[in-house]
Image (tube, rainbow, N blue to C red; front, side, top):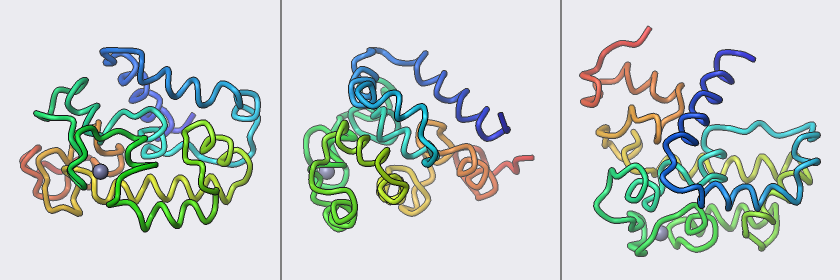
Length: 182
Ligand SMILES: [Zn+2]
């Protein structure tokens, strides 16, 4: 296992440990369980940091940041004002993601329920890549990310992959005092 894989694994373990409720993980398990053998045996598809966040609902989503991480006063969506921001809200509902959603639907079809999305991802490398791209787009507008010019949460492992955090550390990030990472 390389260093990046080790870091991602450590992060996933940390997420599991920090979960206030197993309910969110249950959603992911339910989505993957019907496809488990295909998931394990697949020959394509890297599980990226952002993809994992969308599949688990943990990370840069209002509900998670409010209820579990206790970072935000409300679980609302910063993009459209919906009262509860979740991975499902991003995938299926949020108007702010209509253009990205159209591009995704053009590749994987219109059923964006998590289980259907997982089935599509396993069906072809192109579908996997389309879902991963959607998740990366989500990052670009995620709260606290560099694209917003807000650095307060940038070096937060809930919001940034280890590689992104290293970039954040090199920038003048108030969260770290701009310390250069090794
Ligand atoms: Zn929204």
